[in-house]
Image 1 (cartoon, protein in one colour):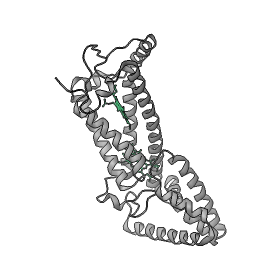
Image 2 (cartoon, protein in one colour):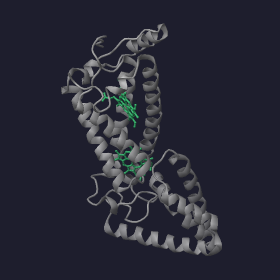
Image 3 (spheres, helix red, strand yellow):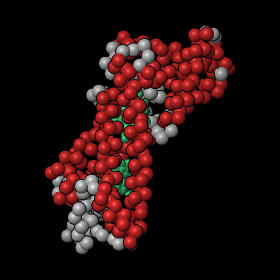
Image 4 (cartoon, helix red, strand yellow):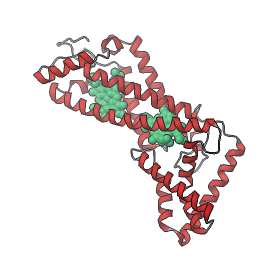
Length: 295
Ligand code: HEM
Ligand code: HEM
């Protein structure tokens, strides 16, 4: 790991572009797009392209951007922790040894997120707004290799659910209707896991009720949990072929990797704040556009 105490840190435009592009894509898919929707997939492909560019840059870019400038080395990371303990500050031309471990961890996690996402979605849809997310309204949920017939069946299933929701609104189950609306608006956010688990539980229960008592009450419950039930079917591969089962497993891995990514990002931000307080704002300045003008 090179350390040149006098040279100010600089990142070239490609490193800055890929960093802030990845930040924008992660925030976009975590907060603004519906999970699995056309926009989610397009933003995901954008993220994958930026990541690919940065990894290529690690091989052919300027010295400080190359992997060889910040090899993953636990021994050096421990040494760096020792320096922190002794209050020593060394300027590094590239990432410091502890930061380097974090960078590789984030990249590896992003690769898993992109790999599972692309494996589930296939090529990006021609019209992103026509493919709705798991919780979105409008458009048509696309499954990999789904035939028009199956798509039409899903549409009528959705119509039926909406009809049932209207009945629920007419007074049978107000609380259930509220849940339906909340679910429809929710993007692929941090609380995805808990809500989905809840939806799955309700879906299972609704299915049991529907089989035992095909009454209006069961209809209303089905309406509220129709999406959750579909997610459940996808995850367990119920009644479908092995492809659906595979997609369910990929979905689980995607979700776990996304949650791990959030943890790493929190640690990354804590590290940036810590290092800034310890050794000054130059590490942040080096990453922002125009932060370190040449000459
Ligand atoms: C860091 C950015 C990303 C975040 C925060 C994110 C978040 C999520 C979350 C929370 C889900 C729901 C999990 C599940 O249904 O099992 C999801 C689903 C999905 N994501 Fe992502 N994702 C990201 C990147 C990507 C990428 C790169 C792609 C593909 C290019 C992608 C494609 C999908 C697909 C197709 C689904 C639907 C899975 C299903 O129907 O079960 N995502 N995403
Ligand atoms: C989605 C959120 C974020 C992700 C996934 C992320 C990821 C990364 C990655 C992969 C690197 C290595 C850059 C490279 O060599 O190409 C990096 C470096 C850096 N990031 Fe972030 N970052 C995020 C948010 C932020 C934010 C909000 C800041 C604001 C201060 C920030 C500040 C930095 C700095 C200063 C570095 C350089 C660290 C060093 O000098 O070693 N990051 N980040």
